[in-house]
Image (tube, rainbow, N blue to C red):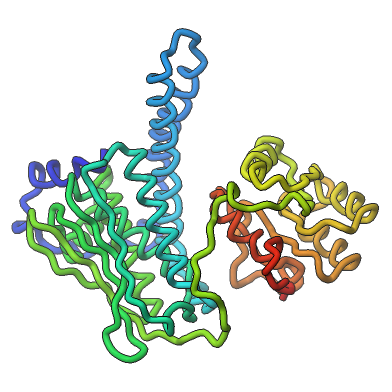
Length: 407
């Protein structure tokens, strides 16, 4: 488990004796090593997920056992998703197409989402000995900034994950402070093992240069740190660390900030469907996989919105043609009979204003033509978290929302 990482690190490695290993291998070797590692971790996580899912079918289970098994399944799934994202990031960062996409970012909302997410994670992991603290100065000019929000989020997620992994107890503090006009410093501070950025980079070089995994926990920590470092560089900063062995680390980076010209409320929206009343709204969900539809249906149930299910793009177009009064459409992309791109194009001819939100495992990139994506207001990438779904729909369904036209 990640929370014993600090103890195992000091038992297995003499950090002061580690030498920097320059990677002489080609990019092809690095990608091959990443695929090999991903395959191993995929099988390991699926073994836990499938195994405990099967055990949940036993009639003799106590409620306590059911709760534990569900936690094992969730934890393995969550870690597998983090690993998948980071390994894809590593491969993507080596491509010329990896670039910064600047957009409006509600900074207090982003940081509060991370705080809520990891507070919940600490509870689920039974790590009550770790306390999370978010620090944000009262500086309205930084409430909404222009940056690549997805990359900034990934950097902070990885740093917080590592802080949790290297800590057994104590406080983990994260947030930002103003360094000078238009420059703010983001940081994540822990009282754990005290591993520096330099040592994590050395561990990463060990990871890509050997033929087998020595310790998965160290590999994951190194991968997270390297991904965070590279994304920080793309954002125009440099990831640094101030570390004292066995006492803790502070990872920090400074970015030059461009303020957004949009005037918005500084209030952080509530991202729970329990607090939204969408009973007056109707949503068309276009999804060919029933389990994915059922998940969206359950996530939206507390908000009481009227839900209609279309099992493919053709069915969605037929339904919308007969009833163009839907307030929002959640559209899958890869479907039989008619895909989401074609369906969105046909629906857009019937209505230029209905919000069409892609909910898909397909990830649009820089090579996608405008004709493919222009009919969508935005993309939600699977797996979809409930707060991301609510955050997206709130832009169009809440009574105070202003409709954002498709680009």
